[in-house]
Image (cartoon, rainbow, N blue to C red; front, top):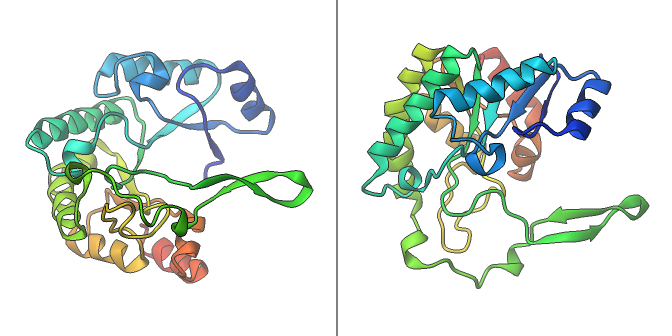
Length: 239
């Protein structure tokens, strides 16, 4: 196990210094252009600059998290998805060349991580975020941004068929993150990674060592899963 922290791709003295002060030597980052100020990580030199900057400050860049560029063509199955997949593959190759071994990704189309409230009172006067379905149950996104669960499964399998062998060849583990919140549909958009059974379906189709799981305990607990049993099972299976 490596003690790591999600840190900004662009140097942030306060956050990076705090991480070192609490003993963090391994970093995860999102290297999207709007966060890094560079081209996206399908461009080798951009990713190399980010990795070098972390190394210079005493961090090993262990992985990337989230959508590093627009993934809608892949998730919605749009006509230009093959070009986007090629871009994704190049990113994996760049990661392998730079020895960045982990990619945490999701397959939430149109709507990603989502909360309806950010002012829920908690202990000590803290405010936290939360999701309440009744806040959005009558809200729908436009038709062209919707996708059914069946279409999402087809699109996910099409994507993984192309990229998982490339990830394996590059020495990169692709760790799939559950949907957050794990509810379908959300604003008319289907979601599929809402149960442990869904992850078993992905594994049954692609039992390959580059196919891993981001074990977001809160998401799996929200699904009603037994996270202790799941952790024991998936650790045993090295997933």
